[in-house]
Structure formats: C-alpha cells, structure tokens
Length: 208
Image (cartoon, rainbow, N blue to C red):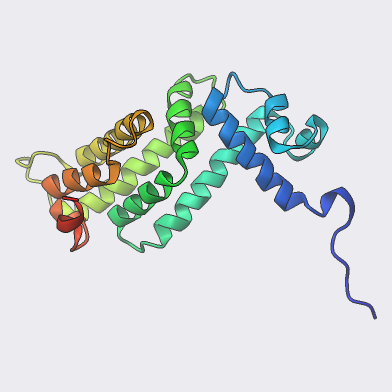
C-alpha cells in the first residue's frame, strides 16, 4: 500500500499562509491602527488576493482577534518558560518585545483605540488587563507578604503600577529607543518596592 499523501491544492499551505497573513496584519495594524486599516492593504502586504485573505479570515474583526490570540499564545509560552516566577516571565516578554517593535506599536495603538466599547478588541483588553493585574498581584503577594497597611504599595497597587509603567515606557521607547531602557527601569522599580520579587542577580542587572 502506498504511503498516505499530504494535503493538495489550495489547502496544502494553509498553516503557512495563515501565519503569513497574521504577520502582515500585525504590521499594518501597528502602522495604521485597526480602524484605518483595510483588508486590501493586508492582502497586499501578505502577497495574496483579497479573496484568498477572506478564505482564511472572513472579516477584519476576525483577523484582528487572530493577531491578538497569536500574541497571547506566544506570551504564554514565554511566561511558562519562567516557571512560577511571574516577574521573570514579564522580563522575558519585555526582552522578546525588544526584538519585535511592531508588537509594541500594535499594543500601544490598540490599547488606546479599544477603550471604546464598540471596538472589536474592547473585551479582549478588558480581560487582558484584569488577568495581568491578577497575575502580578499574586506574584507580589508572595514577595511582599501580608500587608499591614503601612507599606508604600499593596500587592494589587504594585501590580497596577507595573502595568502602567510598562505601557508608558513602551510608548516612550517607540519614540526614543536609544534613551529608554525599559527593562532596566522596570527592574529598578520592582527592586525598590519589592526586591524579593526579582531573581538573585536582579540587583546587578537593574543598574546596567
């Protein structure tokens, strides 16, 4: 009996084409924002026809959610590689973002656009910030211990502060990548308020 053959025809390259489309969409969304982007622009960037694009993603909304899901999955893999150390996971994601500035551009654009409840990414960002705060709050609760109300920040406040710091610094970094060392600043802030949350070598890295 002959060996089974792989998929043929237009579906043979579907995973690769979908990845190609998502990468093109990420780039165009980052440059123009969601609302100003057209499916035609994305198809041209991906090097396929609009018909081919619609075959894989039936609408611009579906494409945007596909891009967001892809990034969340990638971030999940990076976070998992740090085990239970949530702060190290954040640092790894920052390091990865440095190599892919389009991701930072996309997040900075969408986080502002999606404040409107009518935006297709609104629910995604509402849940994303809730989950991110909960994730960091748990990490800081372990590092800071029980709060007696006398500390500078509670674990929940520290979590919200770090997220605000990340968003603001990423925006500044997009404008001036030479002057803003996002990772070093985040490490220094965490070292100041919750030193136990950082790995043992953080005091060295935070001063670089």
